[in-house]
Image (cartoon, rainbow, N blue to C red):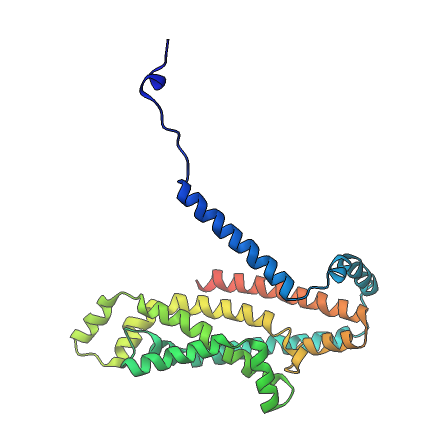
Length: 269
């Protein structure tokens, strides 16, 4: 006796059609070719790659035990790192507010100011913090001032973009209600726009401070102040035990920054 499926026939279900399978295999083959071409064009010295685990073991062996004889200086410079991140974030927040206002479509005065605001945001975000630091070290000289200005310029684009998007997503009804009563533009901003974007404002400011705390730890590598100066000096003089102490201090700072950020989010948001 034949079953019902055998009598009437049964189609086999497949996830992809033959055309889709061919396209997927073509994409995978193109990716594989691109990876092979990239590895061949960057001239990787594979002997060093295979020997990297042994070199890492040797380096970690030189770092142990960490040398805490210079701990006082390390902590002082670590405090400079915190100050760089804090001051840079505060200045960036203040400077990003008008930029966000110009870059939001529903608050910008005209198309010219819209594109001006977005040009500032793109310019700020497209240049890495280290590049900004190199530029401002050449202008202000080595030190924390160059680091503060570098992180500030980098942060303006980040904060301004997120605040601008938050402004564009606000509820328009409070704005229209105040405008209908004849309220001035300043009052519309203060009573209809600002209350709606304040949660985003604090969230973005805290997040950016956390990011800046991490970025400020490497600015010293290019002379822009912070703990990176001592780290670079320890590496240049092959003082690996002190380099280990600096790395542990940076790790502790990053963990502490994460704890503080979480605490501020709970208290404010």
